Image 1: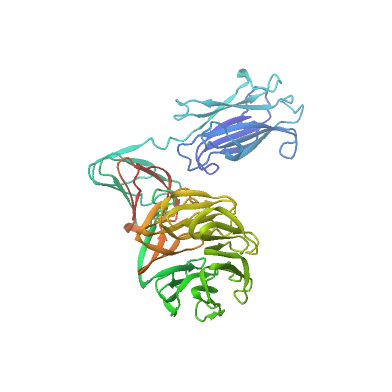
Image 2: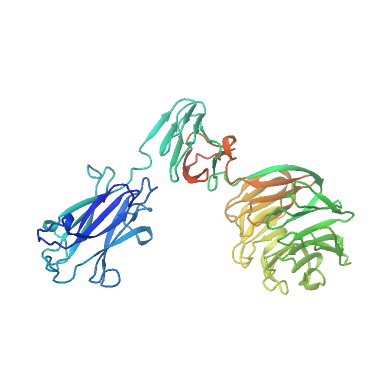
Length: 555
C-alpha cells in the first residue's frame, strides 16, 4: 500500500490523499504502479481556511468492508482546533484491506499505514499530517522505520489572517480572503467583493480613529444576527392616536387589535400600516387574539366582555358588568381567561360562549396563558403572582407580594415574565414555580414575549421601552420615551407594536440584516473588528467580531 498526495482535481476538489493498494508481486517491498489493484481517495474539505486537515487510521475487523480485515482511513477538518480528529469532524473515509493469507508474491504480508504531526516547514508551510505506508515485513503489526516505502503529506490550509492590507485612503475595493486595516483619521470605506465564491471571507479591523464602513454591491446584504445591535428594533410612527391600554397580535404579526381607554377599539390587517375603527364608547382595558387573528376578545373596565370570530368585523358581548382588567387567549381562541379587579378569575373553554368563576376575589390586574391554555399566570395589585397548570381551574401562589402590572408567557408556558409598578422585571424558567428579579427597578408597564420566550419587550411609564434578545438575561433600551401600556409581539419576535398613551401607535421591526444593495452597509469604529463569510445568495454572514463597546452601525 502507498499513500500519495492528490492535488486538486476531479477526485478531490480541495486536494487530499490517493491511497493505492495491491500485492507486492516482485517482493521488493515497494508497491509499483503495475501492482496496484485498488485505489481510494481521502479528500480534504473546501472552505476551511485557517483550520488544519487531520487524518487518522483505525483497525477494520474482517467483515463487509474488508473480508480479511484491514484499516479504515479517516480524514476531516480540525474545526475545534483540538489537534485531534474527532468522530464528529470526519468528513470522508476509505478502506485499505489486507490480502488473503498466503497470497502469491506477498506471503500474506499486510499493508500498514501510520500518521504523525508534520510541523510547519518545507513539506507543509502551515503544518499538517505526515502519512507513512509500507508492508509489515516482520509481521509484528507495527510499521517500523525500515518498512516505510511511501511518504505523503496532508497539509493545513493557510491561516485566515495571513494577508493584511493597510488602508490609509478613503476607500478600497476588497478582495476575497483578505484582511483590511482601516488606518485613517477619516472613515474608510471597504466595498465587498463583487463576485465572491461561497466560503470566501473578508475581515475588517479599525486601527485609525476614523473607523470603517463596509459597503455593498447590488444584490448583496450582510446578516447582522449575533452582532451587537444586530437585533435592535427599528420603529415607525403611525397615524392613529389614542390612550392605548392594550394591543394583541396574530402569530405572524399581520393582524392586530388595539384598545384605547378613551373608548376606541381598532383592528389592522396589514401589520399596523392602516387601522379600522371597530367599536366606540367603552373603557377598554385589555384585548387578546388567537394565533390567526380572527378570534378576538376585549374586556372593559366596568362593563362586558366582547368577542369577535371574524377578525373584528362583528362583535358580541356577554352582558356582564365587572371591573375587567385583563384577558388572555389560547392559540385557537377557544380557551379564554379574564381577570376582574377585586373579583374572581373567569375561564371559558368555548370561545367566550360561557364562563366559569375561579379562585377567590383578589385585586387581579393581569393574566397570560400558554398556547394551549393549560399553563397560566396572573398577577395581583399588591399581592402575589398566581400560576395555574390545569387551564385555570386551580391557582397556586408564587413569587412575593408586589404591585404586578403585566405578565407574559411563552407558547409552552415554561418561560414567564412579569413587570412591577415601581419595581423590577421578573422572570421564571420553570413554568412559574420559581421567580428571579432581572434588570433594574423602573416604573414598568406593558410586556410581551415571543413564542419561545427569547425576545421580550417591556415598557415603562414616562421612560423608554426595553428589550431582551437572550431570554431575559440582559436588557437594553429601545424606542422613545413614553407611557407604554400596550405592547404586542409576533410569535417569532421580529415584529412589535407598541402604544404610547396619548400618541400614535409605533410599529417595530427587528434588524436581521443590512438593507439590500448599495444602500446597505455595516460600520464600526476604532477597535472594532468583524469577519464576514459569503454564504451564497448575495448574503455575507458574520463568523467573528471584536466590539469596542458601541453597537455596529447597521444601515
